[in-house]
Length: 140
Image 1 (cartoon, rainbow, N blue to C red):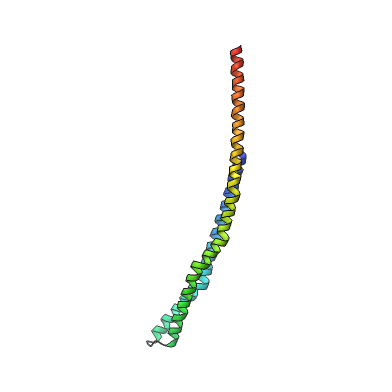
Image 2: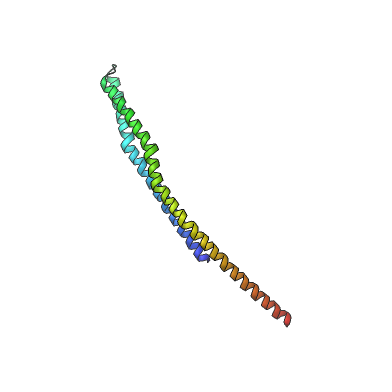
């Protein structure tokens, strides 16, 4: 019984470790994607904008175009962060978490009930043996 509970604890720890690894991998991938698709282009646009402003004191159509592209990238980044990432988390990680909880909790409950039955049987046998020995001792 103790070995079975230990095995279940080990299995739970392994599953939680896998869940944590998946979460970390997901966050790293999101960070890389965010950096590659949003931050780097945004930084490049800002650098071009600064260089063009320094080169020309007049506000030309190129600067307006860059500002518009910058606003579009900002909007895309906000959408990615608040919509795409939340949806991906909800679809991928939350379902994995709920599956783990739905599988592990009933199994742990069942094992707990089994261990309680076994413990009760051991206690009854102990009490029976102790009573028998006590009766035999008093009969002598």
